[in-house]
Image 1: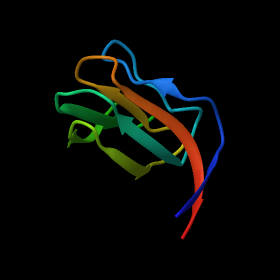
Image 2: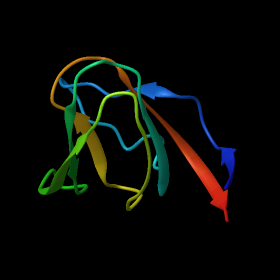
Image 3: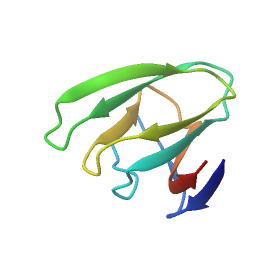
Length: 86
C-alpha cells in the first residue's frame, strides 16, 4: 500500500475530539503498551461507534470529514490524514 501524508500528525486526546484536519482516511498508530478504546462521533457529537486499538498496532480508518475521533485515556495514539492506493 502506498500512502500520501496530507497533514501534520496529531495526538488523540481523551479531553477533546478531532476531525484530524477533516480527513476522510486516517492512519492511526498506537505506540503504547496498553489497549485503548477509540470513539468515533458524527459532526453533531452523536456516537457512531467504538473500537479497541491494540498496543503497538496501526490502523487505516475511513470516516466522514466531520466525524471526530477521541481516545479513552493516554497520549500514545497518533493520527494523520492520508490518501492511499493499493
